[in-house]
Length: 388
Image (cartoon, rainbow, N blue to C red; front, top):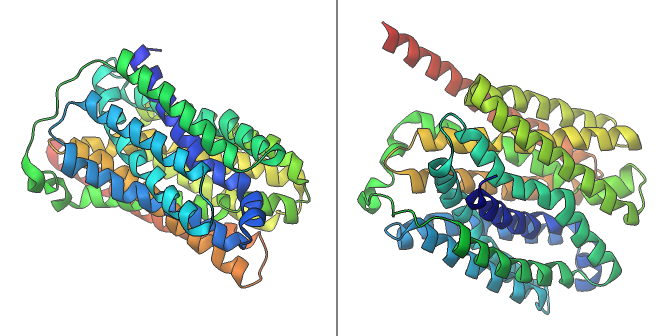
């Protein structure tokens, strides 16, 4: 692996821990702050909203800056947000710090995907983006379970303290290993949005938002589902979260490889069908421990199998506006996260049980599948017309 990609992956690893560790420590946070599980789900949504605000804000403020400088600034903001979250005295302060912690997330992935594409070998762009995203999957394989263990043994504050220390390492690696690439051509703020005049980018944005949002309807509440429906002990959640992370890691690498081999949009389309089946199976068999874990593996693998293809699809559909295009993928992804965390909490608030978020997710992913299917159909028509 190129050192530049390793530096980017170290950043996405830290961001992955910051985003996903809340799913594993949710019960501990609720006890300490004396709030309900659905209220604690707001911390997930706050982070996602921070991502949605931070990504376009970075385009507005720093679009003329060199790419490496932007990454360094985002790493610094990541350190501050997580350090303050670890010291938050109550619900509202933690909610605010989760928002701040989310600000650099989408922009880092957006700028990082542009850097990864530029340093990639020809014909391996999707795999290069997958390697960058691999940091987030490793976070779920090792970092999030480690954070869950720290939370169970010591306090839910320690994972955020670890994130701040890791952020300092990320800052150093970016400074040393990422090449000094020039800034992107400045087309003006208005010019950054011109790619949105076409329907193709909108279909990619919507399939990203609803496809990922459907998984987050269920995954935001995976800990209480595994404990109350499948019957696992709270202590076993560390191993279960590791299995979820393994699914993400394998899904991400397979998705990147298949995207280069079989086409980006078809890979997203087939994967979302698998995601729907996994969510439906989770709803029906949530009380069967081994099957609940197996379906969780499939669902999390699908979540990250679509990430590299979706990222590259929007980059390809936003030439000349790549920074905003890359930001839009992360906005869509995290709007889906926020939508999922909120929608998944609704049946719980209604007293329907912890298996029902998965059923909600089925219908949300179905909307995403319809969008990517429309994109594939439109893309085929365009290719036929160009060949005439």
